[in-house]
Length: 517
Image (cartoon, rainbow, N blue to C red; front, top):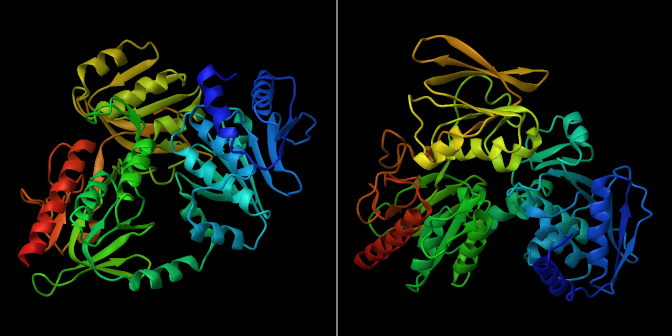
């Protein structure tokens, strides 16, 4: 089941298990159950502290339960957690076996203080790079608090269940039999959603922070690079980010970051955060900025108002809030989001196995999505607004070679149409003839570019007509002491390597400003 490299890796990890625990499998005669039995037997054979039982009686077959001897822990996998979820399996084994997690003590204390019976079910796919964060968070919560149960369900393995619950995007989390959340969430976000007093306590703590020399808003490549460069100058540096890593968390393959031939978004973000933490940088995660108050005079304190009511202050501020997926902006899009309208083909593609789907957008992202989906779904229809696809020629040739792909150019999407609460079709106008047409699909993946996260800055500093922050060669904005970097700015070519360079430049510009004021 596991190749030699994975076996060696897993054996080394399992040497860290200190407490005995059982794996209790519920199996049937299916091929998936045979694979699960083989995998679990290999795992149990690697440690004398793990005992495999195959007499489980769970309703989901196949599945397996991890349970420490003498505990009431309920952590179940209705999945064969390989692919993107192999790390989730390893961590679940380690935590069940007594190995300490890397989560902060405040978060662990908050998990253990949750005083309610919480039964989580998380639906994921093995190709989803957004799912492991949620899977690992709920697994840890189940291990740390006996009143929390977690079941990890592979939507591809339990398609009838997924369809019965109307789940068309992963990760999807249900709590006590009702929808709780969808999309990528960190452990801290889940705990904060359950702990209603967390926001107020956090706001008081942030209000008490001493002003920063450099306060960075946003934690993507630009914000991370700015933090490293600022901290290396020996000045007080802080980051407030809604989600550390930003949009890079949702990027699958990265093959154009110089000196790194290949990596994946989550790995890049983990390395970025580790690098920032090498220095004395305060990271305030899960914080959304809502207002900027310029200093009363050059060199004075600039204020950033946060959504939780707190205010952070800095002698300089670097804005690196990045961008988000652009919506089509037509009727039905919001209504059928996560009910057929999706934005992450790698995450949600497997849920549409054997079904017809559409992709909107003929740039590199759209064409790559269509190519990937063609290997999973019944048929892909790609719609591009322009007369020609804008993707690289090599990608276009690959797309055109696929037998189950139809390319429609000059197509202006006009509406997403649903039946019984799910997407059933989309309509478009042929821009050449003016004729209205319709495509029957079960899913549609929108890949039409990005929108800068700058709405909260309107009326405070200069923005371009596209909403981008106008910056000069040093990253300075129209407000003294406020700098900006990355995809939220007017700098062309939205690339990770460019954002990182701009972040470094903005930090050096901010330091020069501090020296002069």
